[in-house]
Amino acid sequence: MASTLPSPASPLKIGTRGSPLALAQAFETRRRLGAAFGLPDEAFEIVVIKTTGDAILDRPLKEIGGKGLFTREIEDDLLAGKIDIAVHSMKDMPTLQPEGLLLDTYLPREDVRDAFVSLGVARLADLAKGAVVGTSSLRRRAQLLNRRPDLQVVEFRGNVQTRLKKLADGVAIATFLAKAGLNRLAMTDVPHSAIEVDEMLPAVAQGAIGIERRANDSRVAEMLAAIHDTDTGHRLACERAFLLALDGSCETPIAGLAVLDGGRVHLRGEILRPDGTQRLFDAETATVEDGAAMGREVALRLRAKAPEGFFSWVS
Image (cartoon, rainbow, N blue to C red; front, side):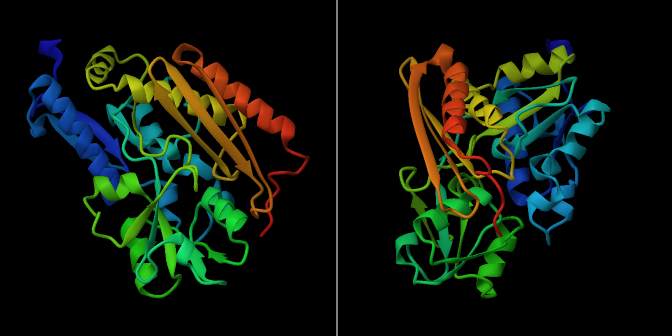
């Protein structure tokens, strides 16, 4: 392995989106790989790839193709050999990868909670009747309207900095961000309060970073094995099996969270009508080895409970 390690003369190319958060995740990946193999930063090259999801900010994701918009161009470059690995926010990842690619390395998971962000309101519960809240997430929209149907919800896309500017400009009184993103950007001074998972169940895989590779690249596979977090892998195997069985995408309000307790994994999952008028919940516990099968079972039970047209979009 030593003779095939990357070097400043032949760096390992790390593909990523160009937002500050995406870059922070790529830098964390570089740092962990460097520490694991005693390599300098110069042994890695960060390659920024602009995705369709980054380029089109004036339309909801459901109108332009869903989760794959944040990954397609990066995966194309990975398959073409232009980069060696791709670093992703796992909550943005489709449940299936293109042929020839594997997603089997996860860094230790950050805080899974959503953050309520406002320049003038301390907590979600303090929002006035009829207040305007901005979010691009169908899950957050549905969860919010399920609890507070009096609120107005407007489209609010863009990276963390863009959304904060929209708040400052008065487009909305509040929005939501992933607590993990604020932590990774060292932006904990942004006015926010964490929303406990009992109040707002997070997106599947929220707070997790995944690293994708070519299936036939044994050198990279060996390097990534050194930084893989097993516990995060067990949790995401359960959550992503749950999402896959629901055929989940950015067009469907789905939430799910797996938590480990010794050798067992507990999954909570919910689906909502897009307008928030109905919420269905289920939960189960299984051994870690049976986590993925249990995730599928919880999803199938929820699907059986859902009436026809449950996910139909209501604007």
